[in-house]
Length: 126
Image (cartoon, rainbow, N blue to C red):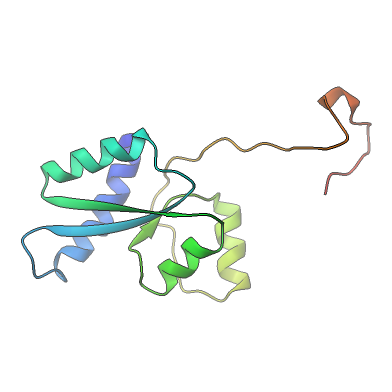
């Protein structure tokens, strides 16, 4: 998992290297939620290569893609491919997926059902 994220960030970093005038390249990656230990590891490994990773946290699923489209961040890592493709289509954004990264588990929650066995055949969730 760390290798995949590292590869993604290095791809972005190589593209950004030609644009940076300082000795140390900085790559800004947007994530949704809190920064976790995976990003600490990626940060350390990139630092060994002279690349500084700045993880930008967002509190929703819209802002990271908008920030990426606006050039405020260099990459993001938080969404499924299906969500990403639908988002760029709906918002007419010129964004491209360049690699797969870590994806946190997602859950379905209900105020009425306590156990999946209570969900009747043919019921819809939505």
